[in-house]
Amino acid sequence: MYGFTLAEVLITIGIIGIIAAISIPSIITKFKRQSAEAKLKKFYSVMNQAVQMSIAEHGDIYIDNENREDSENSDYITTWYKEYLTKYIKTIKSEKANTAYYEAIFADGSSFNSYMSLSGPTGHSALYIYCLNYNICQLGHYNGKDHFLFVYDPTKKMVTPIYSGNNINHLKDKCYNAATEGYRWHCAALIEANGWKIPDDYPYIK
Image (cartoon, rainbow, N blue to C red; front, side, top):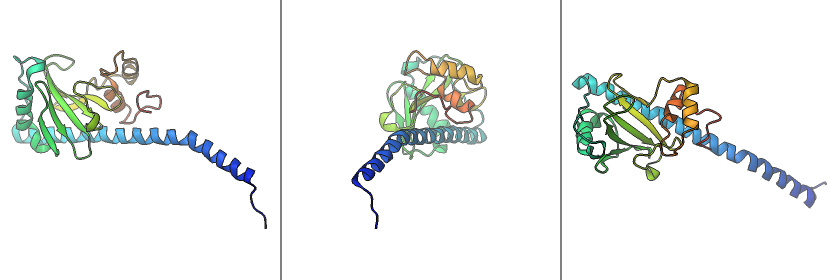
């Protein structure tokens, strides 16, 4: 009867350890990216289904925050959500977060905080910061890692990543080279443009 020597066993364990050290980070990154992709695509779908149901029942969704400062319109946006969207979105919590933001939490642990903007690429609009994990969600930040920026565009009558429709190379350049971590405007639009798949060279989810 033949067996393994201690040296052979140790060599085998060492090889397994090396393989694990190489492959586990890759597996973790793949899982994180697939989870982010699924949540982003679901958020896009859920919000636009709600918009379409609201339009079917009430007609066009109007945004009228002409005389409100961005930092002082949470009362307006909370009323706006209750009138137009809340009943069509399944959440476990939705309420005014502070003087500027409205916040909603989904059953899967993701969330969004939203505020009305008086200016920007779509003019008067509702901006959404979608957070993959409510527990680490920060108001007003969209870092392209676990916070992503969307907008309700009244002209298109839909919720889209901000700067949606731009060239994918332009979006990649803007997302990857954003000077400030908390303001990566173009990253959600990049992932959408890539078929809701995170590009292989995407630097923020590893």
